[in-house]
Image (tube, rainbow, N blue to C red; front, top):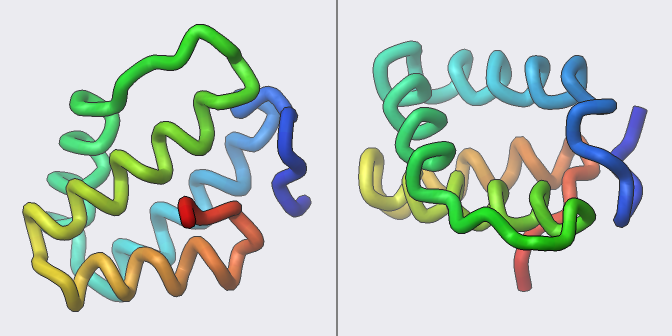
Amino acid sequence: MPYRAGDQPQHYGEMWGGTFWAIRGRLGAESTDRIVALGWQSMPWPVEESRVASSFVRALLEAAVKIGGDVAAADVREILRTRNIPLPS
């Protein structure tokens, strides 16, 4: 199920779960767990529910740079793109 702008993020548990497993397959469990946790913890929570997913994606990519550098961030970006998750510009 591809993500559509304005959808509620909780409706996409399977999509996010598959995305995290794909990242884990590419970067390994330890790095991925740290990236997802840091992304979640550092994410600024927008008032508008429709902006939660984009805020998390941005925080996830920033966490990937902090934990694994530009290569890890590029891998995460590619996985998000192939899963049709909107990327920040």
